[in-house]
Image (cartoon, rainbow, N blue to C red):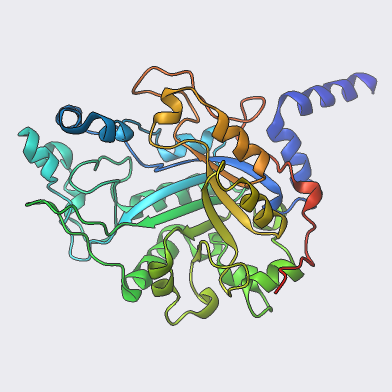
Length: 372
């Protein structure tokens, strides 16, 4: 018996996911009481080599920030990452992003980029910057969603996966560059429908699930709290990470996010849709992150940005992110850089990407005051 206890203790110490799993099975740990590491622009592949060389000649300081790439999404989840970020472009009629201007600049054929012609199809597309940084491990949003659903079905007890979405509309004011479609309320309706089709509504932990019988999301967080890990295993939490204008558009006809699939970000703590915050600078926003976490909100911050942190092997931002209690820490470097030499690599102790939140003892499950 003593030997068995020693083996169990060894496993708990050396395999952090096992320790977390034990907490999950106890039914006591809530969704806002874990801390996870995830990836930024999770779909991104390395920018076209010839195009990148041209861009670097024009502005090496600016374009160095594009020099990173990610493993396929399923491989990231296999490692233990439980947060992803996906950039989405509307393409109602299809073909808008099938022939990137960047390839024309290098003399390459578009068929080299889209040999299967998937970019000609109608529906949302996934890429970083139109015409320039367009290579993706899942070029269509539906491809990403199908991959996620398949992985989830094969790992039904997984910790909930948070996915932040940026809805891209920025234009590049140069001749020949694509002008993205606007995200109207109707386009957002189509996006929500795509989530339901691609993932399955039963796999989405939506704002309605958090709100329950309460009038708004902050009240639900105060009175009930986030669900336990047991209650939300195998789910996806979808997040629209946009500013005020697009947030308002998404809320049109859906007060407090009723019947919407995504949570919004950065509402004031007393607004009806307040639940998840994005505060990207863990250094500048350290105190605010802690304040929001202690109020029961879920916060996403970043460990690094634009390759510079990794190039300098600077862990300051990551250490602040861990200490802040932000539940989601996003990085481009859950493994070392594959595009330039650096030892920078982000993970928790024991090479894990999930752990109990360091502020767990200061976050009661419910009955919090938002000082209305």
